[in-house]
Image 1 (cartoon, rainbow, N blue to C red):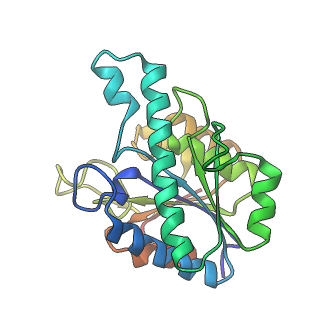
Image 2 (cartoon, rainbow, N blue to C red; image 1 turned 120 degrees about the vertical axis):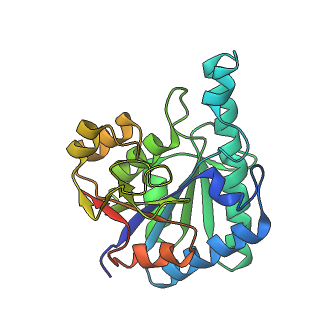
Image 3 (tube, rainbow, N blue to C red; image 1 turned 90 degrees about the horizontal axis):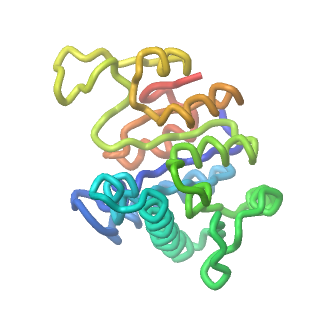
Length: 235
């Protein structure tokens, strides 16, 4: 095994499957099966899940809503996704803990770094919800922050519709060039929209590798966690 501890970043849209909104149970189950495979391979798994399938703070803000309020709503959407993922994993006999950056003790634990690390060491999958607990920060930044805090070996970023990082949008430009390997400073200099600049800088400063791969094939989650060279590796 190449990695001992990984942070898996799932977008909210990945839980919706082909739908534009909501949570598709069969898709969540398929994702959970791959996470279980990683868990059974004795890799410690932490997950950061987005909320774009339910609500996007930026979209609400663009329509005149207060940005902070819109972002807090987005954080609550990530908790809904985290609980859906937890339910699917628990049904497969994978012990999990959901930790949220906003306290809601009736449904999840508050985020405590040492406790999260202890859960991982005990073989539990930890799902981080509610982002960083602060508006104006994306779940990409959450993934970078949590990976630094728990000293993860890598961030596995699952993307829909693309199998890595390109120099331009491959859906609009047929001659777009795919990168197999890339440096964080190149992402910033080229203005590539892989993660937001805050998350990219955080990963670069803390030397956290990133693997960007296609989630349209769910087995890629397991392949990336096992260290196969798929997608684009950023270091």
